[in-house]
Amino acid sequence: MQLLLGRLADAFRQLAGLLRRVRPAEKSTLLAAFVSAISVFAFVEIADDVTEGDTLAFDQKVLLFFRNPADHSDPLGPPWLEGVMRDFTALGGIPVLTTFTALVVGFLLLSGRRRSAWMVAVSVLGGIILSNLLKWGFDRPRPDLVPHAMAVYSQSFPSGHAMLSAVVYLTLGALLARTESDIRVKVYLLGAACLLTMIVGISRIYLGVHWPTDVLAGWAVGAGWALVTWLVMLWLQGRGKVEAAH
Image (spheres, rainbow, N blue to C red):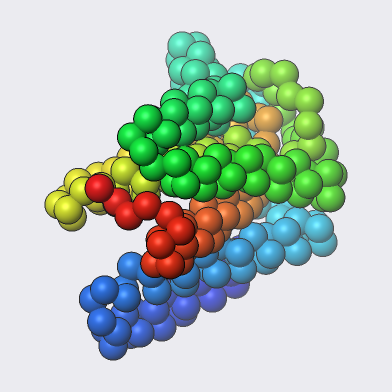
């Protein structure tokens, strides 16, 4: 994990130098392309370490950080916090994310942005399919170090909740940010999307249903997928195939 963080730090230093040499209009596209590439790279590195068993010590240390040292079946904090975490984790579940997506797609259709609606639907549906394919491919068991605080039925790697919350909330946050000219509002919307994504992932670790690297991998591949589909939308918009922001 330290090697991965070092490589990411070097990459972002190179990006900072590159952004100083490009035109302002190109910076957002370049940044999105770079971050999507970094996200995919991070996922590949994490997956490789997980497959080789190199993350076990890290996973165990972080998972136990959220547990009572005297009783690993007891999550840290007051009893009500466990209920709060279950509520947070529901924000990354298929029913909630599907509802959010359907409402946004309906809004786009009613406002005359039919192609944008299709792009959002394809992005989310593609993310769900990719998540299931990755889970089946890696077939990692759920953590057995601590009791699960809720029922789980699928494989562990990558975290579907972390991945799909990144896909949905980052896509919708970017979609809303397109409609705003104030940079502060754009930052707020994207920051809120990132915060929701992080809360969902942390809740999965707290409840003991995912290893930390499951969540990190889910965040990485989810952000990468959201950014790639966003770049495709920008490309189609430039060719007149997708409606411009109002």
